[in-house]
Length: 293
Image (cartoon, rainbow, N blue to C red; front, side, top):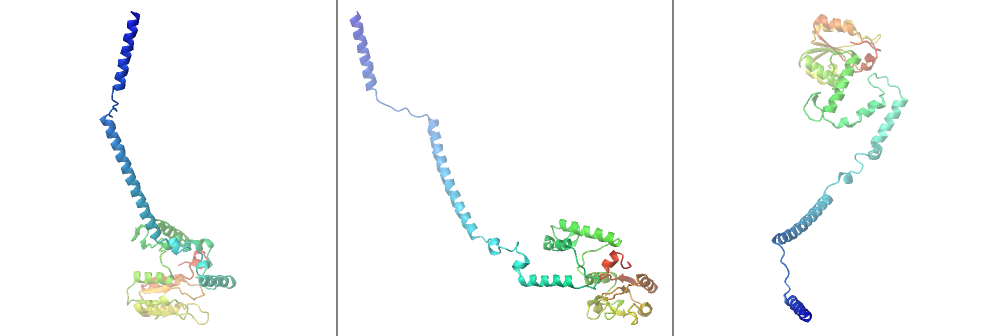
């Protein structure tokens, strides 16, 4: 029995062995989802490759555009950083000479002043780049909010300095200020009474070469030869004769004190406006060195 059993086992193992060896080798098929995933990955790889190529193309175009773009720094390497000495020797030379002249000579024109470094810095600041037509809060251009701050400060400080209720700091010169005042109070053709140019008056007080002498009927008064003081009797006589709509007190080259109260009396007597041109003595008035109108 033992031998028979062993023989049967051997036969069985042989059959199993043959069966295993004879079985064809068949690879298992991947599930459908895995195949789909592989296709998706392949497609994604192709898309990524296309995107990379597109990005490379964009970079090439961008690089080409950049290389063709105009670089302001290349054209004007020192435009924003060069000093006057570096960019314009002739102007720098003239500035230096004027500086030496101011240091070595005495100015007797009251309207000319030696300003502080702070004033020079403010006048040479980026504010010069801004166009600000109109008044603070009512500009015709945008971007004026910081200019408004500066102008409002100037107005308030000038009002306090001169004890005035209203101030306009926009005129660039006394001539512009005079023109604005004249056009606000009288009309072309009206009569004005001002100091003659020969006596120390200003062109804008009715001198023939000036617009004021063309727009208005200008009558002029002078000074006494004995002491170069204003002849107030002549002013009164001229006012009574010509009945001016406006009388101008002040001048540009008169080194004498002006009696503004006397001018006020004369203007009231003939019913005229009184306009004071103190552009040349404003600093003296502000510091109390000359009577204020």
